[in-house]
Picture (cartoon, rainbow, N blue to C red):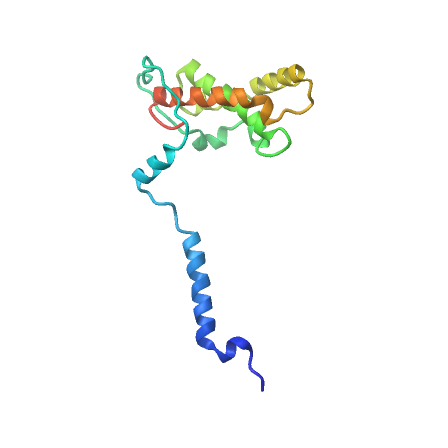
Length: 161
């Protein structure tokens, strides 16, 4: 009777299996919660200057946008994929942060912006650029301004956007 390769060497098979399982377990290990390591990583990102006169909103209650998913507009949900997804999300990010700063509302109500505003801006950009579909190149300046304003909004709200 001929034995298979792994049947002749049970220790080798066990060692290979243990190695594979260790690799799988390591891949699922959560990121370290060491704040110093996280801050070092964030230091690589470009810094945005917050004007000295920016102050937290009095009595601000900050809710992170990701916790407002039940209130996201249908257009935002649809813009998670597709040919214009990135451009539409760039515009939404700008409209969103503009809404927070304008209303001084850091809750979900302030952070969930109108999708109609996004559509109006997108249509104007399509006409301005003479294109049927927007790409991230058409909205890169809008995204940069949204990033700049987000840092300011986070200071005003006292927490992550």
